[in-house]
Image (cartoon, rainbow, N blue to C red; front, side):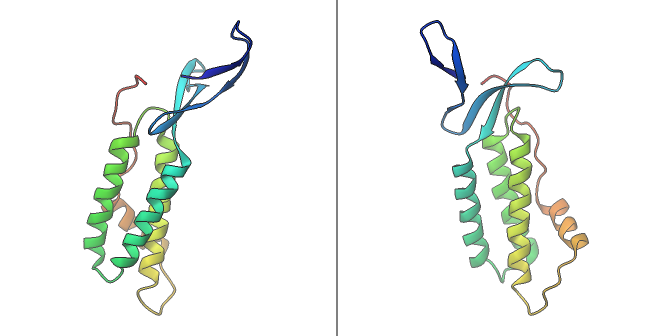
Length: 139
């Protein structure tokens, strides 16, 4: 829940509060009514992306289907934990950054620098899950 800073009457500025997994703040939904917005803490996302990047470097010469299956399970586990209403934008960002890291690792496997977008999107569609809300809307 948003906390208030100010006088005893509750007047003042709102500031977001941080829990274990997400940061909550007041916002509006698509209909324009009040909603609690929950977003992934950026520090946790960066840490997970760094761990994935290191693992991809270690798995660089594994076959693409093998590393794709591993990446799909890692991304699905991340989504299982962070997929709450109001957080889909950051989940999509996480998926795109994982795909970027995977593309970078696949490009480093050979001396050719080209890696077509079509092939990249096919790999993403085949192995990486798309973000969707998996938990209840209660905070």
